[in-house]
Structures are given as C-alpha cells and as structure tokens.
Image 1 (spheres, rainbow, N blue to C red):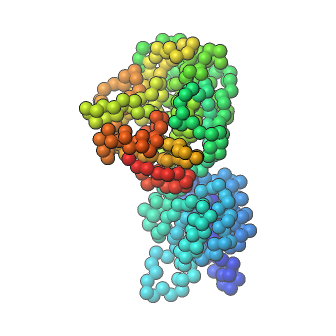
Image 2: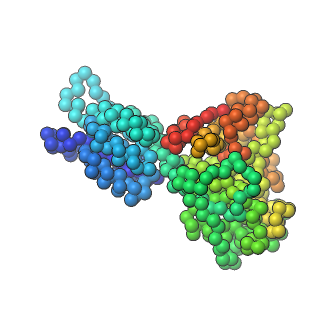
Image 3: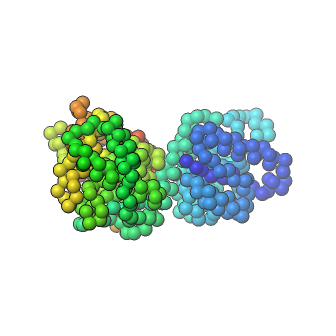
Amino acid sequence: MKVGLLPFYIKLYEDVAPSRHDSMQANAVRIADLLRQRGLNVVRAPICCLRPDFAAAVQMFEDEQVDAIVTLHLAYSPSLESADVLAGTALPIVVFDTTPDYEFGFSYGDKVMANHGIHGVQDMCNLLIRNRKPFLITAGPWQHPQIVDRLLNNIRTAAMAHKMQNLRVGSVGGNFDGMGDFTVPPGTFGMQVIPYTAQPEPPKTAQEAEIDADRARFVLGKLSPGVHEQTVAASLKIRSWLEQDRLDAFTICFLGITRADGWATVPFLEASKAMARRIGYAGEGDVLTAGLHAAIMTAFPETSFTEMFCPDWAGNRIFLSHMGEINIALTSQKPLLAERNYIFSDTGNPAIATGCFRSGKAMLIDLAPGPEQTFTLICAPVTLQAPETPSTTSNTGWFTPNSCAVSAFLENYSRLGGTHHILLSYDADRESLRDFAHLMQWCFAVI
C-alpha cells in the first residue's frame, strides 16, 4: 500500500520560532520511517502551513496515486488552511493523532511547542465533519506497537474505500435477466465496467504449462484431456483479458457464454483461480459484488464469492454453494478438478474446481442497495463446519450464525435487504468493515 504523509504546522511558528523547524521536520521523518518499517510505501509531503502548501501536497498525492492520506499534526495548525483542500480530494483521510514525547508530566519543561498538536487535530476534524468528509482516526503514542497496529488497520481500511471508488470491473456474458437485487446504475461509486474483448487462442505451450500446474494443484477426478484442454484455453483467454485491461474484478454470466461468441466452454475455473490471486469475482453479471470483493481483498485476501442456498433447520446451519466458482485457497481439503455436465448453453462441458469451505470463524459480508442510491454494508459473524472428507464434485459450505438461530438470522438478513450474492471472509473483522462503511458513507449493520 502507498500512503501520503501530510505534516501540519502553522506559519506563525515558522515566523517567530524558525529554529524549531528542523525538530518538527525530524518528527515527520520519524513517522514516515516508522510506516516504511511496517511495509508501507510512503510519499512524504513538505511541512504544510498555508492553503497553497496543502493544495500542492494533496495534488502530489493524487498524482502519485496513493491509497490514503495520513495526517500528522506537528503542532497546532489552523483548520481553514487545510479543510477545504482535504474535503475536496477523493482520497480517504486517516488522522494520526500523536506527539513526539510519550510522557508529559508535572515537570514538562520546554515540551509544549512539540506536543500540542492534539487541538489542531480537534480543529481539523470538526471542519472535516462539517464539510461531510469522513475520516478515520488513531490517537496514541507512536512508540507503542499496538497503536501503530491500529493505525495500519485504519490505513488498510482506507485502502479498501479507495479501491471501491476506483474500480475497473470486467463483464463477460452480459447479465442474468430478471435478477434485480444487485443491479445498480452505471457509474455507481465511479466504477468502470469493461466488457470482454475477444482474445487470441493461447499458445499451446502456455496451455500445457497450465495443465501441468493443475495436476499439482488439484485432485483430478473424472476429466477427459479434451475437456481439460478446452477449459484451460478458455481460462487463459479470461486471464489475458484481466491483465490486458488491468481489471480489479470481473463477473461471468454463464448464460451468455456461447460458441457464437468464441467460447468452447464456460471459464468457471479461471474465476476460482482468480479469487485465489486476490481478483474480485461474482457471478451472473453482478458487478457490484465483484467490485466489493476486490475492495475487501485489498485488506482481507481470504475471501470468496458464494451464495446462501439451503437451510438446515434441524442442524441450525445454512448451506453455501454456487454453480462452479469458489476461492480455491479456502477449501478444507485439496480441491477437486472434474468435468461437469453442462446444459445451460451450447458450449461443451467445463472442468470445474470444487471443494468445501474450511472450518473456522468467518464473516458473511453483503452490500445491499437501498432506495435513492443508499447502501447498507451487512456483516454477520458465523462459524463454518466442514466434514473431514475429500472434496466432492460440488462447491459446498455449512455455517452456523454466531448470534441467533437460522430462522432469526434469515429474517434479520432480509429485513436489511441483504442480496442473494454474498462474500465469505475468514480474515475480515467487524471494526474494519464498520470503518469501511463509514468512509463510504453507507449504513452498517451486524447480524
């Protein structure tokens, strides 16, 4: 991740106490180095005092395509110098409210000048709220690793929001007629939807290498060489397109995959592989969930597209599945690769990767469109249970809601308008999802 570090200061102090500039600069350098040590790519702006300084710094961050701006008050800084510039950028804001010294006791000596940035933070945050610019904030001593951990969590969350507002989502096969819950107007969140463009047949050497990799990656079930070859060829066409158009996510509507459009079979296999490479995905032309998947995976890669299929009333569980797609990095056993009888278009049978979602704690995530372009991000802590048996020829998963019985869970989910396309994440946490919704100015609900 790439962040812009924005140091705040006041022109008054530069004028009356210029000798303090170097120590203020050293504080900014210290925090930049701290973030770099944690693996971030940091673009550090010069110390900013006046509006032109802030405008130039934010323009630099936009040109550098950072994922978020991290603010750092070196001292008090009048908010009207920066507020409209920060409110006017699409980049998310993460406030780091810290000071050079850990201790400020009764005998504080000459520490005031270096350690009074907190009321500058208060001034700025008030103006950001009044200008309807959401932000995340971490307050505490930079010397404590747990404080830096919280800051990094906020930066990762901000990166999710930035991705959500800069998505390039590919679409193959059109839309599933009549499915309405995930439909949103073109340009929602600034999303670019890129239709599939025909790709040349992949070289035989590339196909052979992919087939060899499949033999190592999967348990091979009933699968003829011809079906495997045509599936790999179709999959590599998708992969070429993803790379060519620099796509963050994509969706396949299987009904639109036909021989007339150059498809020998449906490339479900590449959807499953792409999710394991942190590329977002959803089925049936659902660009909304595909884009959400890409955004979530900037911070939480152990995430898959799926659907709630069937309730197990007796066992208080819900069965998860989808036709031919699963994040193959998340299965309980080595995934199976086998031929699937396919009757939904004129293409041949595909090879499909299948498995059962592994046991463990997880989070169901859904973005539910509401009236007048409102949205609710729904999350539900759940527990997955997987049988200790080899992968079968279907994609499966069973979860129990952590908070209530299945019947109450389903009632609550539909009261919130939850859609039938969802994400399952093993590493997402409630607080990050809450803050993600805050930055996106969505409602947030937990079941």
